[in-house]
Amino acid sequence: MGGMEAGPNNWYVPKTEVGYQLWNRLTGVQNPDRLGEASES
Image (cartoon, rainbow, N blue to C red; front, side, top):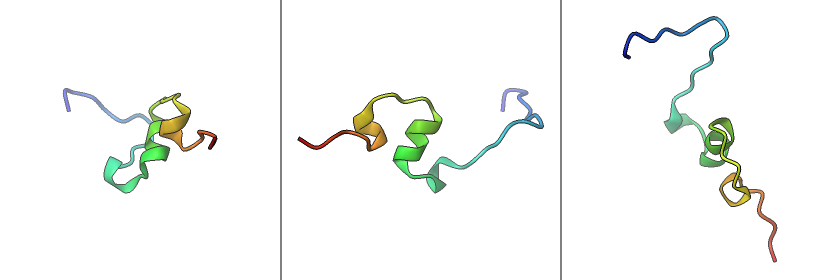
C-alpha cells in the first residue's frame, strides 16, 4: 500500500484476529480501561 514494504523486523497480524485489548496494547493505547487493567471499585 503506497509503496510500503515489510522489512525483516516487521510483524503483521490482521486486526480481526486479535482481541481488542491486545490490539490496543500493540498500538500504544495507555488508557487502563481500554487495556482491561482498570481496577474495580
